[in-house]
Image (cartoon, rainbow, N blue to C red; front, side, top):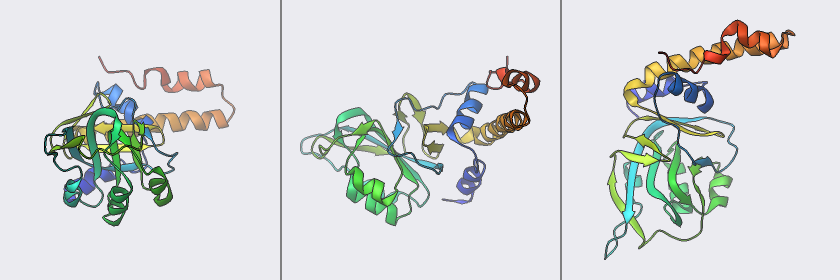
Length: 221
């Protein structure tokens, strides 16, 4: 990652996907990746710039399925658009091992993965539509890298900021990252105060009303 990447990633330190999702709603931005779930209940939040990969049905003869990995930088999140296909995979144990060696942040797939035990054993974060054992070789091929892709109804452009955790995946447009992070922190500050008031014996209704909870995520008019 370059200096700007590192700066943008640092903005989301300590935040999670629910908080960022609320900020996106507040700002009227899309970015929640519908149907993309974590492979495990990860305790850490993955944050990194998107390295996007677009797959398409294979030509004859078929093209490559995975050589792009050489171009991914440490800390990047690989974001793969396989059109939501669940009949063949685009990520397996060799990719998991190599991604770990290269210190890639994680992988998000609009599609499925396989060799799940390797990913779980290595604690390598994968977020996908599911798992299936059948190879993508001769079925799909890489069409392009670092182009806009669709992941669970969300648009992802190269170097957008990906936040992923046990709740799922959200994507923040790179040029709005500072704004989104600021709003997410404001929302988290209010929610933290609500939790404090609850621990002091206030009712949930009173705490929420005192701190404007019901309008926290509402888009400004």
